Structure formats: structure tokens, C-alpha cells
Image 1: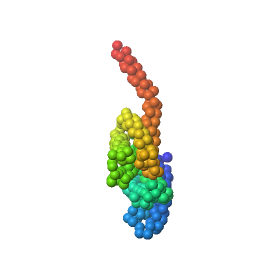
Image 2 (image 1 turned 135 degrees about the horizontal axis):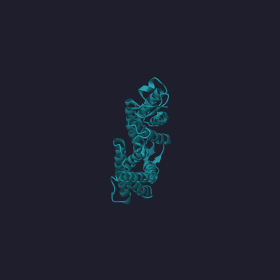
Image 3 (image 1 turned 120 degrees about the horizontal axis):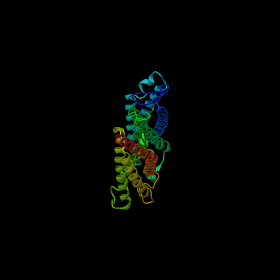
Image 4 (image 1 turned 30 degrees about the horizontal axis):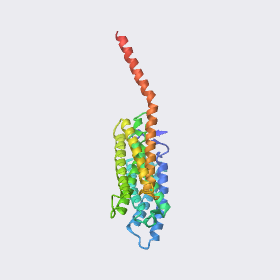
Length: 313
């Protein structure tokens, strides 16, 4: 097993730990590209949204295919595995797929979700695999950053890496909740009474997504930029977010809520709560596991002080 001393990554036979993610990303981009092309052909006059979906999927298909081939070559893998080039590619693809999902999953575009059919998903492959590609791109970015900052090295800043992937996933979920709620508000509440229960719940979804996104960004930034993990802050935020997203699920996905139809807001409201619950459980598990160790450390320190005082006498 080889470990890159600069990035802290485990490298074997020219492949990085992200090879499986790159391979999955290539598969998702292929399926999304085929679905987007079929939607574009079915339209009598293809619009900008359909052309964008095809372009992004084709671009990602080409880039991920090249990256996978480079991983499989011992010679060319040195140019991509753990390098700045890989970091730039992952960030660019994540940005592309964030824009693609916002277009594909938007009911007003009619690509994968039909607004005239109560926001029903009409193209499952395009809808689900575009989301799968976006989630994979986020995982690639998180994995690369963890490698670059060396948080995967055994015994070195261990707490910084804890729950980083969960916080990244929660951040993505909250962005979707905020965006989907804002989209529904513009569509359904722009010309109606915003004091209605439906519009109030939609505004709550926007606020919930904005607050969750801000908190998640703060935690991720502190984990990446500081050498000491803010365990207490992380625990308090996880508790607050779990409670808030519990209310979010109740208000947004109920019969009178904007997320009651199956769609982005429904799925990601539940995913946000589930992820926040996992974060809270992970923090509590670490707290209970570290309790005895902390007590032992304090006891050993007190014993050392007593020994030193006796020796002085």
C-alpha cells in the first residue's frame, strides 16, 4: 500500500480511492446523456433547457471517460490521481451538474417533471440519474478535499474528517430544499395571497434551506480550515438542525404543504431530516465513546500532580 505524503491518499497500482466514484459518475453521465438526447428529439422545437442538458451530459461523459481511462493507465494516472488537475475537474463538474439538476428537475422546463400533471416525474432516467450524477460529483469534491488536506492519515487530525461526508451531503440537501421551495413560491405564490397557509409553508421551506445551508457551510469550513474540530459547536448545530428539519418534514410534506407531491422538495426534505439525524447520532456516539477516555486522562493528570507534589516534599 502506497501513501502519498503530500495528500495523504492511499494509492495502489496508479488508482486513487476515487476510482469507483469516477466509474459510477461515468455511468450516470452516460445514462443522463441518452435520456436528454431522447427528450430533445421528442420535442418539435428543442429549447435552451434541453440543449443545455444534452451539452452538460455529453461534456461530463467525455471528461469522466478520459479520467477513467487515465486511472487505468500506470503512466497517465500520475497526471490525474491526487493532482490539482483532478481537483479542478471535480469542482467544474460539480458546478455543471448543480446547474443541470436545477434545469432538469425544474417542473417549468418540462424535461423530467411535468407541471401540468401535478409535478409528476415523466422521465425517471433523466430525473434520478441527473441527481445521482450531482451527488457523485459532490462526493468526488469532498473526497478530493479530504485527500488534499491530509485528513485521511491515521492519527493526524482525526476529528476533522469525522462526519465531513455527512455534512457535505446535508449541505447539498439543504440547497435543494431552498431552491425547490423558492421555485414553488415563484410559481404558485407570486400572484396569490402570500399569507395563505400554503405560501407560509413555502416561505418556511426557503428559510429552512437557507439556515441549514449556512450552518453546514460553517461546519465544513471549520473542519477544513482549522486543526481542532469544533465538537461542541457541531453537536449543538446538529441538534438544532435535526429539530428544525423535523418541523420541516411535518410542514412541507403534509397534505397542505408544498412538498406533498412527489418531487424534489418531498425527497430532499426527508433526506435532510434523515441526514441531520445521522449527524446527531454520530456526534452522540463520539461523545459517549470519548467520555471514558476523557475521564481517564483527567484522572491520570491528577495522579501526576499528586506524585510531583509528594516528590517536592
